[in-house]
Image 1 (cartoon, rainbow, N blue to C red):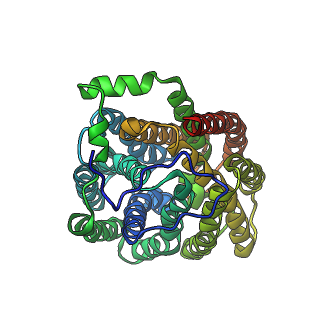
Image 2 (cartoon, rainbow, N blue to C red; image 1 turned 60 degrees about the vertical axis):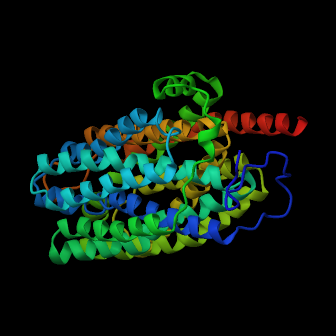
Length: 428
């Protein structure tokens, strides 16, 4: 089997405590490209939350309708990922990436053209069908191109897209929305997606090494064999619980800050900007720690910190903006200290010939779990009028902490599986 010199096969024999493995120039390009891809995907999803109060007022939405707009993206992305999972390891990953990213771009344009609750709901569904699969393809590419001893740093850098969306995307999106209407934000995302898509076409090399390892004759057989594996199901469940514990309060954060904490809509970009700056500093540090220290220990510390801050955040009363920024920064420190090690561990669960299918199913469960969490939140939260405080928001915090505790057990199981797998490879 021929091997692309720019690709790195995972090295189970490597000692995790050894010196950090450097990146090649092509790997650096792939990290930057995937980070930018994730930036647009995350921004498209994240921007709904800070635009929440504006959308609810402009389109005359009640909380349950807004929850549906958020959840339909996630649920459609999940269903699409499941359907695509059987094909995920049957094609060049670059071609799959381009196909689904093009669909995501067109769906985002459709969002910008929406004029009512129903048209926006349909637009978000279309965007989710394509956008949700892009993340799983990106994860499969990372697993193909980088060794396990490099992936903590890669996940840290790629997930900086989350912070980047908060530093640049969300504040600029809100400013555009305040000046030219909420639709303009989606056109901004679409414009960025065009440029990034061109970079994929021009510079990214085909990713095809996995094609020589296929064992199943049909996509349906491949999907079924992947779902059947017990070890994989532990990873799937851990991902779902991680997502359930993260999506619940996110859709209503801007409405909560505006109507309960009395932060002006015009000041929201400052909060997201400061939180994003802090996340940009935190995530590479967490990524490096994940390549040097036991990943489950980092995950546990992040879970404890996140639980404490969630309970404080969801019970906030009117406070100065600097207090909100400080709480947000510490909260995201806890969240990122969970996401990076958990994602890195999950990348080590599947065998090379199952990676595309595993990542697709994994991403699908993440999206669907998040969608159901957002829908659940929409039915729990109550707002009597467009300007009255949100009621029962703190209930969501208590439920989130419960999911975090459950997730601790599942990630521990996943951590033990990965250690046994690496030990077995080393023994052979």
